[in-house]
Each structure stands twice: as structure tokens, then as C-alpha cells.
Length: 195
Image (tube, rainbow, N blue to C red; front, side, top):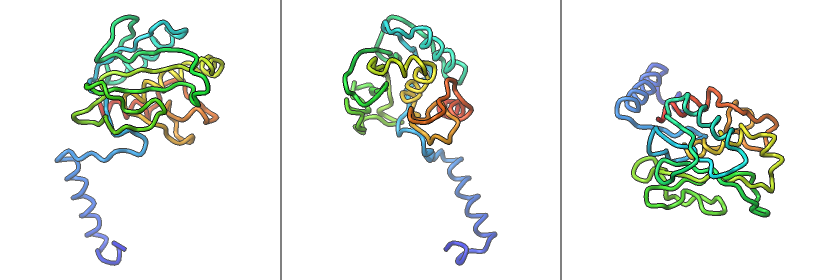
């Protein structure tokens, strides 16, 4: 329809003007595979609270630390800045692992059934800490894909959501045939653009 109204030169000029305005005044259009929230800081601590996966949590911290984030691995402490890994037998949960971020008012971004609450955003209600729960009912899957799970779930706390199986990303869903154990270019670009 636009091509019938405007000449090709006018179309190109309008695209340039829109791109210039977006860049110069800071308008940010969310990509298709990101949550509408961000982590509040470029520094985080991945905390192992006595799981079976301490070495993998340390490895995930190192992976994210190689981006524009500063991430360390700890075994104590808590509160703002901590992303805590816990494990348990959660019954017929329907999930293998889940990540829930909380804003500075201790309000969760998602409820217990992983439904969006709308209480987190990328301005005045950023994620300040999070909990990553590993369901040991799915221990075999977790054990076979540990590097993927640890990075993938932390990615949710940092604002990344699932992409399609065709995407080369640690954020592909567990149902995909290929699960990436390391941060991929797509993931690093997201982190570096946002932190």
C-alpha cells in the first residue's frame, strides 16, 4: 500500500528518518525473543544453595562474565544481585527448571504456575534478584543437559525468552532437538546490547 502512495525515494527517506529518530531519541523496539523487563544491574552473583550442580553454576557464571555483565559464583549471601539455584522434587510440575525474577518490592515477574504477573519491567520495576528451581523429577534430563539448563535459566532472569528451535541460541526451548550448552552469538549480542 505504501508503494502506491509514496515514490521509492520518499519510502527510503521515511525509513531513514524513522531509524534516525529511533536511534537519536532512544526509542527501543523489543525484539521478538525477549521479556519486557531487564535486570537492574550489570553485576550479578549466581548462588549455588547446595545443589548437585555447583561446578556447572560456576561455569555458567564464567560464561556470562565473558559478556558485558560482571558475574561471579557464590555459595552464601542473598538479596538484591543474587540469582539463587535451588533443587527439589516438585511433583508433576510440568517443567524441568524455572526461573522467576523479582523486582525491588519482592514482587515476582511470574507466578508459581509461570503466568506473567506484569510486575516487572525495564524501567522502574527491573528484576533485582531471582530464583532458579531445578526439578529433580527430571534429573536425568538435567544431568544430560546441565550446561544448557544453567545458562538457559539465568538467561531468563536477564530478560531473554525462548526463541524458535531454528535459532542458534542457549534460549531454545527444551523441546528442541539441539540444545546449546554455551552462550551463542545471539545470546551474547542480547546481553551486550542491554547491559
